[in-house]
Length: 439
Image (cartoon, rainbow, N blue to C red; front, side, top):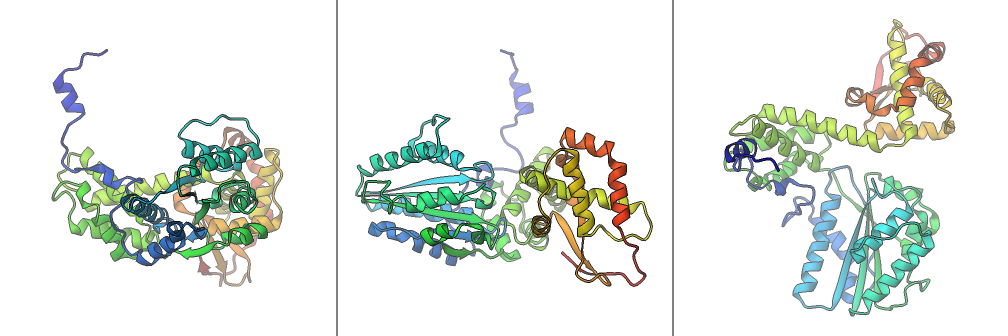
């Protein structure tokens, strides 16, 4: 062991900085004692869960709202109140909550092992078939239910749109009682899905929708004043005078204007600004710290998003970028349109030996990427309904994340062919051309 003097330790790890008092108040796991601008949504979620107290079946829910609209924290908040209330009233009722982060738990086997692990508190053996895992889940629920007058398992699929082929597990969970997979009559299973895709339920099989009968709950974006209140509620995370109301408002306005009221991003930004100020040995957070933090958080968020998207979405973004590069070398050319992008996409798939998706699916994915603000979509005067595309600046800054070594080498080696595809499909811009709509 290295013998470190107290002076060296104190220099590297100061016990008291100038900025923070309790950083945990800024973490993703922190649930405040009250929520801002979510009274209606809290009551909706609570109403659908209230049947538990009457020893009945709670209503399954689909919760939709943009990133940072408070979906996850609201569900946690209501479930915490429910569990606390049951305990204080001395009811012989147990509510177990299983939270599945579908950005990492992406298939039914992973979901089953996670459900078993969270319910049992032990590491689950690997290598079983789906039906075997289900039997273990049903058996575990039955054994737990024997100790209570009523037992409810809440399975919360957070970011369900990232889950691969969820129909089967959702159907099995929703039908476990009616199909008598669970023997106990004092059991309920509640399914909560959360997503930032408004129409996600339309992608599910009809029998799942019929069986689960999801109640729809919409979460609107926060406005500037609401974001200000949300981040100011975490003032106790900072030392007195480390962050002024002016700085809180500056951060809130930036996020409300640029990121559709993303409260999570606002909290991350004020936290990052505090860390930057601490590193600089500043006595308070300034607007410059907020600006620097916004850039850092944005780069991190973009990087995380790109790491989670599918391989073919990566190919499409690269196709737009490569086509745009080729067109930039020729004066008077339009941005790449959907036809060009599709041709380059097919070329990339061929280069790495992957089968391209059909044209209809490609068109749909381009629309989805536009909705996620990973690409820009344009309509240009004089070109009918033709869609033109470019990559957002945030993506360009971290473009290398999209490449694997194999893909990079293949594109570099065959770039001349890609450029030829682009230029042979391009049209010259007319003098009266102008962008009439951009998304």
